[in-house]
Amino acid sequence: MGSAADDKKSLPPPGIVNRNSVWLAGIGWFSAVLQNAINHRPPVKSGVHRQFLLATVGWFLGYHLTKHENYTYARLDRDMNEYVKIHPEKFQPKGLSTSGSPITFHLCVNPQASDLYHLRFPFKLLK
Image (tube, rainbow, N blue to C red; front, side, top):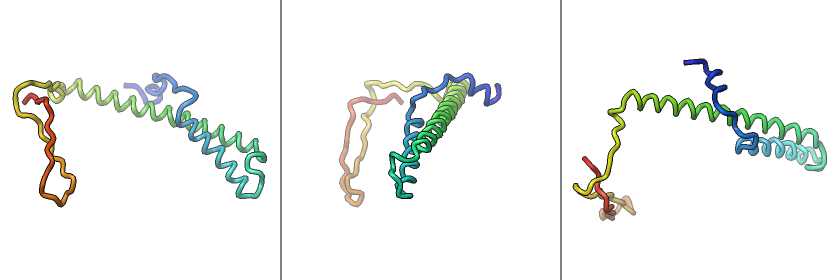
């Protein structure tokens, strides 16, 4: 097992345009526009360099946040798959059969009411 940096390098990079980058770039741009409006300057026309800078910083942070998110989910998937390989007896596939009793769910519309509505499914589980 290698270090975390080696594991991160083995993953493919995320796309340049992703949801985190777009959202954080928009937040950066909006914060510059909001600061202009608070200071009684023309919101969109003044401080364009600052708007561009904050949008770029937001894009950069969003890209690296996505990289970290992908690494975290890949690590969790790897650990989960390793656990399933080590303990296959806990993860036996359960099929459906035609024998046995149907599953009944009790749905109570009003928690204070005593009558329950029954919902029956046509399939039956193996025991």
